[in-house]
Length: 365
Image 1 (tube, rainbow, N blue to C red):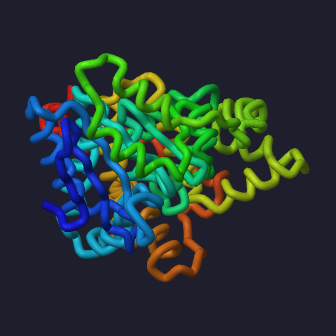
Image 2: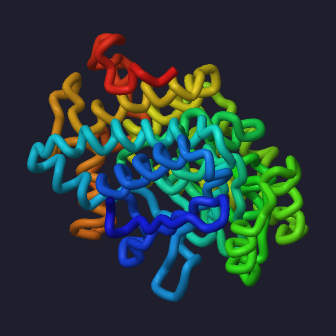
Image 3: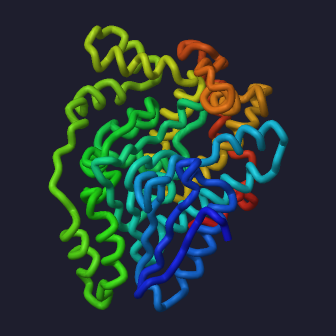
């Protein structure tokens, strides 16, 4: 069991609190294994009627759900050839699948930062609760990666082309916007989180409306403030390629377009092309097939054999170096420009390095 995952049972509810506060609850392999073990035990425990999960911060039991995966570990493991890097992604994606298919209510208190791997342990929840302090994103293109943990599946199921926009830009959205865009189910007042958490243990789960009635008590009516750009998102991000999107944005001098293309120009050009293809393929895939595709993609991200790159020369390791290791914010992407990326560079990312029967996630149905 991990020192950063606290679990306890009260009433008929299993409660999980992430406590790796100094790292904003970024997931490491121990945490993934602890979460998996706990959920599997509770899955078969007839006395457990529901599961709830939250992330603590230095000031209390809420405030930082999960900032993603431990990217410093990714960097170190890639340079050292540590096989635990492969284990991490295989086991994390299996955990994501377990949550999506969990046979009992799984309630995620998505307060504060909910990014990357934090989305992986919350998007599959039966009840996804956010607050006005929620800051949600899939920001992987910032580090030369792609929105994994099922991102191809759940982002592509947002309305219109919002999935492409979120995946390519890594834009941060708030709680009410997450509800409007089908990435959350209800907004709860931050001051009510503790009361709501405690009240769960007193619910009568023999009632079919136990959880919905509980949510109705603590949820608040809100209006999403970040949805005014939907028409523009659909217009630009429905275009056929990253180059077409960028070229169209650059023909406008309006504030939204200038800001959006500025963000895209900072991302890994190669991975932008991969990500657009990922989301569009994901729209037609089952969750299991999407996670298998993403497992293939992440292997190629750290060992891009078809480009003769791995370890320190990979886009992902370089992106992490610039953001979190050296912190110079000046990644040396290769290719350096969106216009230099070719289909021959992108297509091999989607070729599995394993035969179907030997795929690390072959057991997902």
